[in-house]
Length: 419
Image (cartoon, rainbow, N blue to C red; front, top):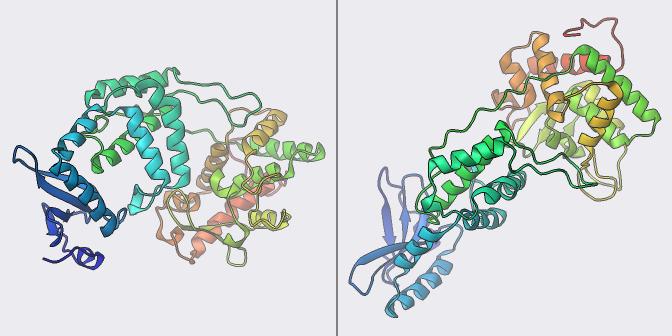
């Protein structure tokens, strides 16, 4: 046993079960603990005034350096000499902590990158933004003042039903973008998922004693089955022509067309950078998507659209905002305007994505191929590789071309479906 160093901690053998410790030779009671998952944390073991052996976790290795943890251990040992009991103080603090306080802890630490999410990586900014919205709109207003230890599964399921009933729905701010914060099963289920996740993180970091949301049964949301028919795609194409003559924002119109021609998520389309498009090889390399880095096929109709877009202010984005250096955010408004002209209802950016997949299904492509086209991560060739197989190239080209023909009213060679 020697002085704890980064080298000695990195070399620590991960146990198959239970936990293993490596103790520091210079500061009595200071050590590091490793569990079968590979997670390593600094700990401090001491005896309180009653002579009882206590152990507390100082922090996770990797978030804290050895020297940072050592300094904290020295401070806590000094407090023990003065009669304090850090373990008891932490237990009392955990017992009294409220949902609001846990949410604040989660948002602050996730934003700082010290909480690891999927695949042991910091939580994505887009995920954190959605979590913040659900926390501030639904979770804190309904149960923010409740102590975590006092919460029961029934309390959280009641919160879920209150969200379904629209008790936390808020109207859109006047002049603002986007729709209102609504209720419904889907919104409620996602709020519960956020609560389960943040409490799971808090439990792992010893912030709370239990996760009362772990056993909650999430209400099933309605399957989103809305898709555009061939007639509706034609109507949307006609609406685009009218909007162009009326000088509707060209960036918004191009983004809506790109959504239909690619089947990409709205965040992927508006955040797409010019260097990601490999037109000669028919793919877009997304370094970071909902399912991590991906190579996604793209048809010639979509490539022509993207290559025709002018660069704005030297920015790398295909769809930049008109006034600030960030992605264009007016797609929902443009889509609503187009649908009003076309006389069709119930259309969102996701409906355009679902339409792309549905057209592929109508054309006889397999479920596995459709999942690959939509980037659901079910097919290895669409993950972070630069190889797109010919079957996938054919599929994306045929689907993209068919939708493009409908938008342009070139119907002579098209077998319509669901007209």
